Image 1 (cartoon, rainbow, N blue to C red):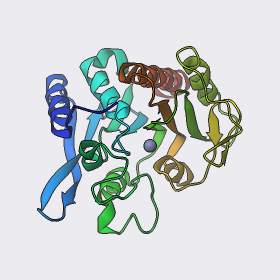
Image 2 (cartoon, protein in one colour):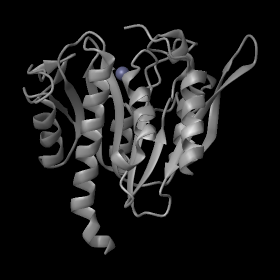
Image 3 (cartoon, rainbow, N blue to C red):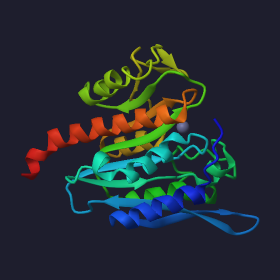
Image 4 (spheres, rainbow, N blue to C red):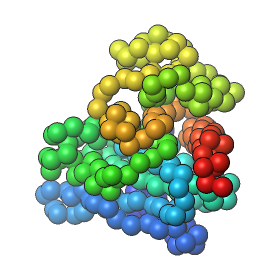
Length: 258
Ligand SMILES: [Zn+2]
């Protein structure tokens, strides 16, 4: 499905909603169109800054995977439904605004932003990644999710990181299986899968891989909503998964707070 929601329209709506609800939204970096100097800002939203339970959400790493950023917009429209007052949320709602407007996976210079390595941390071609890594430096998250889509799929799967079998990831699969079929392959794009929708500990330098291995995220995953389904359904799947993570965090960490 083509996207008729420009990045400026999306971001302007997010800014207005953040203002209404007194959430912090600020620019943490930018991507410059080199021929003209035109700058696309990269934004960060923080909700409940003083809370100890930390949940990081990243969306729009791949520009044509629009359900992620649209999910963040949906959350901001109904904050009491999707944000717990006991959790600190740090949200990067659209990491790749140029790719989003161009309706393509990579950014305007045709670089894939889902990679943290020596090159992307230094090169001018990855200022979006540097905006993110500078902003999250030294932060620790109880959970981190990067919202992706597989545009070729009508089934759901996820990349997850764990030392021991983690029930939350299985819960996400079982809940999502009520809404959409799970991709039950033993290999997904060459990576081993558990045969029930989870690619576990696949080391590819993705954002979720790096932050897990740098011990910045205890729970770290990337969900792949099926891009062949209607956008509204993909957003619903994301919203439901985010609620599942909220519930888990509250159950497991609230004792430490009270
Ligand atoms: Zn993606």
